[in-house]
Length: 363
Ligand SMILES: N[C@@H](CCC(=O)N[C@@H](CS)C(=O)NCC(=O)O)C(=O)O
Image 1: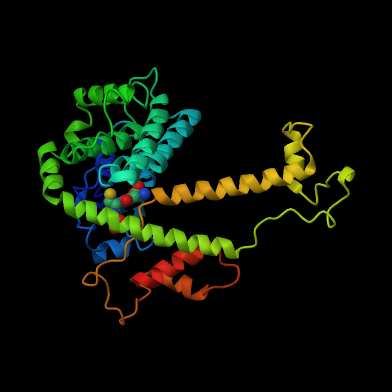
Image 2: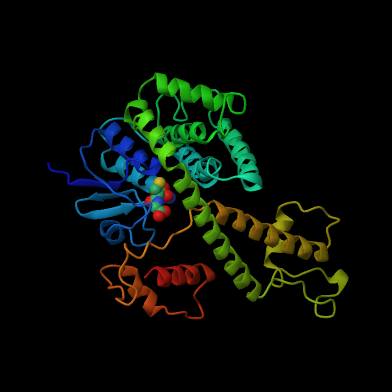
């Protein structure tokens, strides 16, 4: 049966390579569309991934699927009986594979890459972050041949692609991101995986990638810096928005219950949860409230850190997008219709708001 499988990707992208590897390990034949997505947004990409405008996108029987991890799961389920299993059969092991795949994507993938393309304090900060998170990642490998156990699986594929890219980039720019001394477990795994030849053959030739980084290193560094700058602006705006939200504040003493009256679960529903979770007896309701505020603050900090790690969305260069006054048809951005309907309704969350604003600037 003609499967009609098409992959929108780029030979230069480790994310797109993940999907290529998945398809090849399953023995699925596919058409590959090698797109330049770094300096332009091809119409095909805007059509099939209007939300993130990123590769990879798998198109199966005309239906697009975006996000490499989701695509890999889709491939595993769709071609369940071919090639190797990408995710374990056992539900617990499968959950663990998803956990580590997500951890790597959220915490390691971008720092690994960005530490090659930044300088000074920023670079030191990313290097430290990268080292810490990769060490955590090594914990998932202890006592195993592969992340997937005896066979390679989804986590091996995604980590291998990123480390393969990063090792070449770090050589070009002379940064020490990953090495035997810092990450012995990971380096041993990398060497054994290369030796086992399962994944290496699916990687672009080392020299080709090396030459590309060598030739374009200044342009890549400039692009990454520009994106970092835009991300910074986005963060500032978000902070402003957060300021506008009413912060959770402990009620003034006069308004609250008398000190010895306890705090009713209605007043602070989370206290009930805490009581169940063995909060120390000496923690008073007032302390609890402070803790609550502190936790909220930590949460915000964490969110800021996470934002740092996301690749910032980039407006396409003028040449690539629709002319500024041409408007964007719903076909081009099907989600705009939704956005128009939900035009800044009071219920729209800051997250939605940001997406809306970004989409308006790029439209
Ligand atoms: N979370 C996405 C990330 C995809 C991604 O970052 N793709 C990059 C290529 S490696 C891209 O399309 N970049 C173009 C851009 O950001 O403008 C995934 O796992 O698929």
